Every structure is written in C-alpha cells, then in structure tokens.
Length: 110
Image (cartoon, rainbow, N blue to C red; front, side):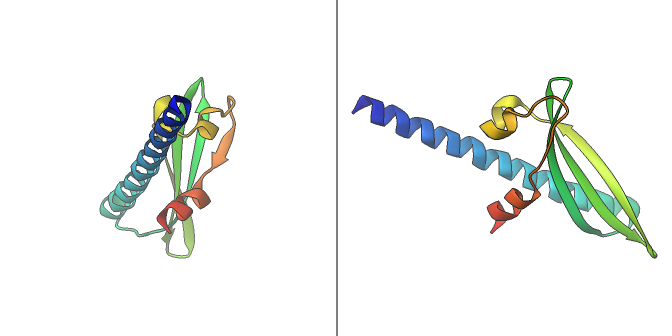
C-alpha cells in the first residue's frame, strides 16, 4: 500500500514537471513572436522548437520564420534550461544531439 502511494506521488510530481516545462516553452515562444514583431515589424509565420545538449548543458532552441518581401528569413534564439525542469527523455539527450519537440508542443496545445 505504501509503495502504491509513493508511486502515485511520483507520477503526480512527474506530471507537474512536464506541465511546467510545456507552459514555460509556450510562454517563451509567445514572447519571441511578440519581440520579433515589435523589433522587426514582421510577423512570425512559423516556428520549430528543438531541445539540445551543448557542452553538457541543455538548451531550448526556437527557429522562427518571417517573410521579407519574397524572401524568407530565419531567426534563431537559444536559452539554457535546467535539468530538473525537463522530462526524462529530453534530459537523456546525448552531447550534440537535437530533438525536435515542435509536434509535442502542438499536442500539448490541443
């Protein structure tokens, strides 16, 4: 019975960490889109969100796509993330590996 209770508490804690992670990423993306629009006077038409590990540090990367006349431009922003703020499968990334988490973010929004 105690084991079941401990497992339930652990599952809730993991769920909270994952929810906070996705909320953090979503707010970051919204802020980026607003900042690009304000600074460059251009709308963001799409974004790709990646998680990566560089020199032992986890980072989230946002590649944002804007249009300038007939040309497309890409603006890349990177921010360090804390190990304890991310789900296990992202924490397990090997050095130099990138993981596209765009679709997972879309699922979180649905």
